[in-house]
Amino acid sequence: MRSPAAICFEPNKPLAVKEIQVAPPGHGEALVEIVASGLCHTDLTALDGVNATSVYPLIPGHEGAGRVIEVGEGVLDLKPGDHVIPLYGPECMHCRMCRSGRTNLCWTIKPTRDKGVMPNGTSRFAFGADPVHHFMGTSTLSRYTVVPEIALAKIRPDAPLEKVCLFGCGVTTGVGAALAEIREGDAVAVFGLGGIGINVVQGARLAGAKTVIGIDVTDRKNTLARAYGMTDFVNAGREGAKVVQAIRDLTDGGVDVAFECTGIVPVMRQAFDCCQPAWGTAVLLGVEPPGAELGFPPVGVRYGRSIRGSYFGGVKGRSGLGRLIDFYMEGRLDLDRQITHTLTLDEVNRGFDLMRAGESVRSVVHFE
Ligand code: CXF
Ligand code: ZN
Image (tube, rainbow, N blue to C red; front, side, top):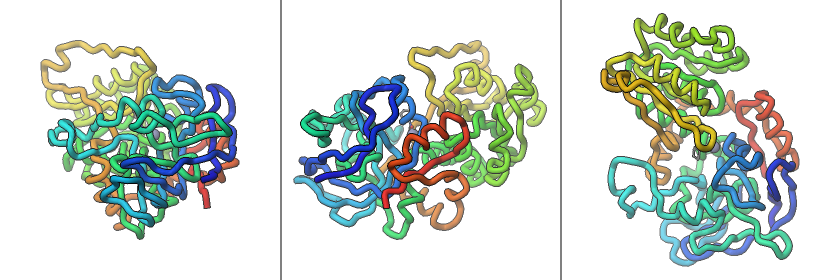
């Protein structure tokens, strides 16, 4: 079928909104009509040519929500009309990782996903005679996309798709990590108050954190962060090298959990250093530049600090996302205040310009 889509033909060029051809879903796949898709920094890395799993031309987008239109052979748990959120991290429920009970990672289709194709090795998208690649296995900046069943979370039908698309990445990554790592009464630090950090802040409130310290280089996100539960703010631009000391002073020696949401390696070190020496945990969420390494003195770990990471908030996409969406439907999580811009697909480049300029928290492309 024909579909409008945003195509990145090559890095560092504006996206081209074109009509593409979408092939029917293959074995184990579903054709999904996307209703809305949020724009995330990981899409920007593909547009800028600094994402290792991007094969061009590609259709970006990995924070979408929509409806199943058609299912391929062998699809067991989805039918036309189901509301779904595409998952860049699938959940096959059968592999060693899925069965381990220790991780939400599932690498069943990672080799083909990272090459921009479906599990059988081919793409479902074409522009004229030429194939166009999938991105992160989701490509939600196409009105119609094809996604393997194991990478589709079926969600409750009453959840508004133009809002809950944010559970496809930012909200789940931030809120999930906060719920997994924070205990009631904890003091936490959140480095970077962008699309991820802001959701760590509201997740920290949900988890019962007592002190939530936000750290950013601008005051611009303060109103939103305070509304989401931030209790203290440290301006890293003004404090410079004194950021860690400022956090220690606010918390009687260090936070219980520090979340790094910028991907800047020296900030990761600050997150580690501001943790309580005997038990504090630094949780890395931000993605570092390719090849980066992080150093820290071993004594910091020997005394009891830990350093961990989290992917998609530690949430298993198909079996765990429903719980978070229920929190939203019960009014315990906010999406409206972080959606700073809504755009049509034709305005998608403006959305990425706003992101580059730091003017948006989340822009959401509406297809209808
Ligand atoms: C990212 C996090 C790092 C790996 C790829 C996906 N999440 C969303 O943007
Ligand atoms: Zn993302």
